[in-house]
Image (cartoon, rainbow, N blue to C red; front, side):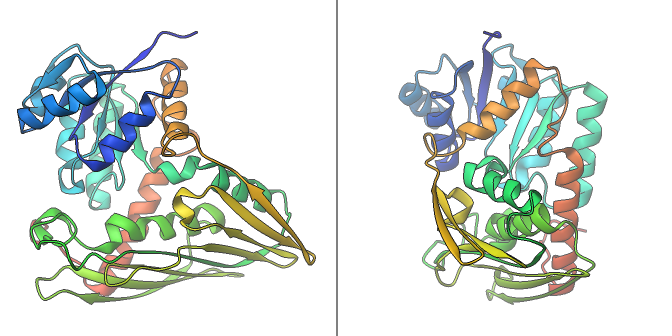
Length: 327
């Protein structure tokens, strides 16, 4: 077996807990370090996951020799700064989605990755979910004919959160679009590519946070209807429809454990359980890239991240979504 990859966790919150639980399930992965601005929080996390190196600041982890790669799981407003610091210390980076708040941030991160010759990937775990991979494969093989319609949504009730929370505080790049709207946008991009035209509409909180966004992606021979929101929950079943059949990715589709296909009137249910929380497939891809000395993934490349954030920038421009820290 290849040498073990040593992982450092940056920002031991809820997502990091799920991710680190999955790291423990992946062969060749070793969780060796954790950093938080709150040392007590880092120590508690280290005790839970038996992590040897604990740091009360992110800079200390970056400067140490305790990890080969860091997983950045902070609120996304901090992604660019922390990723760049880590890469300037020679660390490889898996950065939780969205990689940056806007295209300019992502461009800067990629530039630094290339200058330091380190691996950088956006942590868009759904790209590696078995049900999503199977859907992509079936579409590419022509199993449902020519795709001309896609529907995907992602919504949960978040209005009971404190206004200082990451989803409701504009200073933390709050709102549904960057946090969960990225998933429906990603699926449309994965299956249909970049649209020729986008229509989008948003509703806002009194503090300026975007709460609901509906989107239509128009293509020459297809349309995608997408939605994200924080004011209600939604079913979260994704549909990909072609000239000879349909694929329904089971709820919640971004972390699906199966799908149903309907081809020429014949229904088939595909049971596709996931290992752990579902981050394992993303982790395996990153580790394989590192063992092969790749600086980006062929399955979710720097260009894919640029395209995705570019689509979100366009939606933000059309709907007026802006954050206080942006010029």
